Image 1 (tube, rainbow, N blue to C red):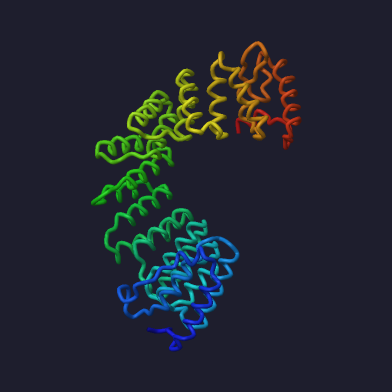
Image 2 (image 1 turned 180 degrees about the vertical axis):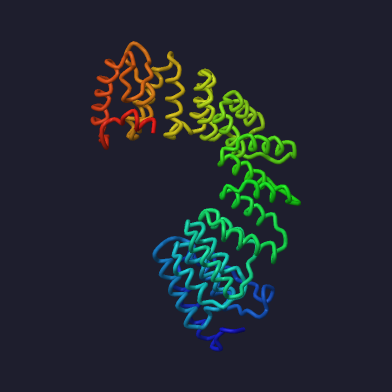
Length: 414
């Protein structure tokens, strides 16, 4: 095999010394490979070198030093082209998020299999380096390495995030001309065109798919939702249920959120009720949607039930959830005391307030009064603004320093 040193004794000495220097927890992860069963052309020592690299799994500086030492041994022994060691070294450097080192390993190899390049492209995508991912894909193609399903899924995601419609279409043509149909890849295509806002193309791809899974349906629903095409999203949701496709929490929340945005508050609450009936766990997003719907229709009793459910589920500490609670309670005159208590609790617990609660309500002692900062037409303006001054002092007492005065009406509305 190319790149394998003739001096096996040198390799064995390095393996022996390296294992002696390793902590016991790394040694325990090493397995005795059945070389003959795996690949007769690869020696026991080469498998051991690969397992040594793979065993460096923690994030300590000792593991990093040990891994770089092994990498040096790999290079000095002429194993930097080894088809087993190259992916192991990429995995090692990705563990420490050393992307440049991982790229150097892949760039210096002459392996024609797409695996190392797929790992590198995926690593760039996971770290939000989409331009680098597309650059690696182009470099891979220039070397005559054929992309596979895993390559295309990562590259299509990078195109969508970069909003590079032109290159996305080029990749699409490449898939059509040189690749057999794959559900995995076509879901990524639908997602990419959805990101571009090309919902007509996305829908055509979806309709032409010989098979679909939950990801296919959720991708279309999310695409319509992101463009505010709620009627289409609701239509897809109904068809999804008719097809008997399993619904997950993201689907439920997207559609319930759509009901909230389109003013169908009862519909949002009905969806949440169906979620519970079907055994779905209500997360913080679902509960915030429920509180929003309760606020609009004055369903305070149901809102209190959601509040209790959130406490039992440990969701009541989220800032967004508390803000939703304040809005709900303050929307009902008889519950302004609860809203006032929640706001003070947030303030005293160290949460820096934004302007939203102050722009919604204030308790003037004789009851709850909604207001908008900068609006002096409120009949209780003379009572409200002295209270705001007192609130400012309270905020300062607990250590919050405002970046400026309260915002004007134009700033609130804009």
